[in-house]
Image: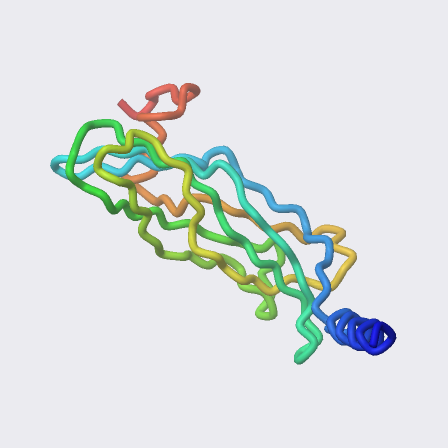
Length: 170
């Protein structure tokens, strides 16, 4: 009976280990300093959103023999004034250094972060994005991750949170 159980266990272990889902090293992921902060304000609410890091793993898809990076951004959401708002838009982008049609170039991911009414500050994981990457080795291939800011929204965020901002436009 013991031999039978050992044989069954060996069979199960070998079946699980034959699965071809392997994790690979990922290319360098860069978060540019100027894209780490966002200021969100409406009539009654003001929030600071910081992109503080990411969780990433890479794998090779057997079906198409291509490599992918799965990126989950990590945000710190801070309520600057007491309000009843619990949802804040925190859009982010993923951009590859190779802007080939095989890779994504720059793509924006829309999402909403939720913070309880009584919370002042919270660290949250964003929505996961999957990005096609080049085959290893990743010599010059880089992935850029940041908050999606443009125009007036970027200027307001820079004035609110960047201590190096010189206010030259005023």
